[in-house]
Image 1 (cartoon, rainbow, N blue to C red):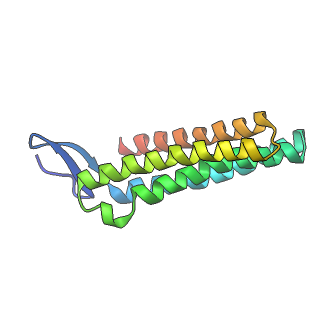
Image 2 (cartoon, rainbow, N blue to C red):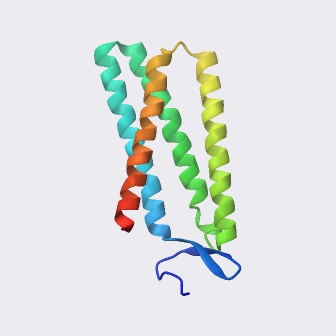
Image 3 (spheres, one colour):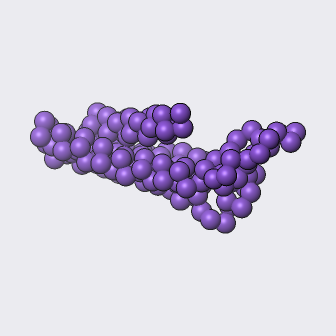
Length: 146
């Protein structure tokens, strides 16, 4: 079984190709998620401002911003050039990126909730809305592979 030509790396199991990743497509998708999350955050913050006011808009910016910054950190860690040399190191980078993303989200919410007066609903709505972007980009990737 030969590897796909554009694969950046392969994970194998007993000599069989298990996962082949086109690095340029995966990297571009990760950054599309970050850009889309930033746009979605702005949209939710704008709607929050119009419907409820400035505190709610700032709260939405914080909630969506937490998710966006965490996704950016994950993408930067997972796709840094030095770890893309082989599949095992790349897999480790993805796990490390996800761990960093989780740590950033938890720490950011703790800091925001302990130090700022926020409106919880717009903050959480914006945070959750960024996940819609993630699923849309994922669906586009799956559709593009068919």
